[in-house]
Image (tube, rainbow, N blue to C red; front, side, top):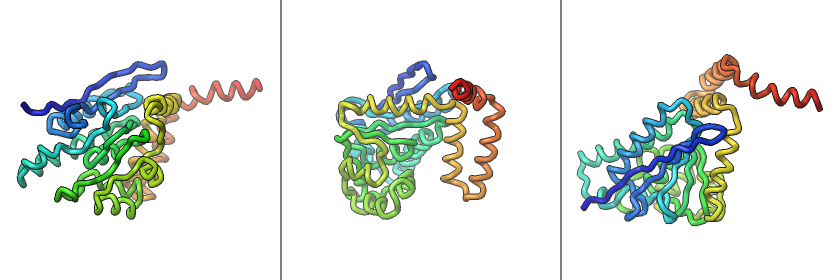
Length: 260
């Protein structure tokens, strides 16, 4: 019987807004990315992108053993030139749907985070990990180059560190992942969810419109030249005032300051 892969979704209504928790689930194979899971991820992310009230997304792996062990080797071993292109295109489209979500996306990482899973994590905005993390790009060790969203790694960890990852296939320890900038927050395993929630609360405490604008601005930093990115950000700055959000959020602060 074929392995089953899916992405579970839980929508959490908090006092500060709605959060989606997405969980990669292929438990018999450390949440390896097979076609069913990839299709489910694409569908979930695309649908969430249409939710104007969504404040944030957390992406995690099912169970307590792994984020995801990368693309399913049993699937990869059966590919030919045509099916390989279809498989990797589908994976890119799913990862790209996550990357293009209009709200912040947090990757909550534990255990193996390898190959395509490391690329998926790289497509998220912030990565929180525990000390069981094993990150790496081991594709070259099975005769495959690292492609698609591996192109995000130089921007995260620098060209030298990205080259080290993709040319050696070495697995790096969690502290190394933090040192090179792949991981932003590193905690003990029992603190992983609590730390992720602390990060969520910091994001949710900010203006909802400002956060979405900030993510658009950040994407501009990545794909536009400096002058165009600055011009786009000026437009975003002006537009947010039209929503009334700055006045609503600064008002209480200024009133308190006047009383003090």
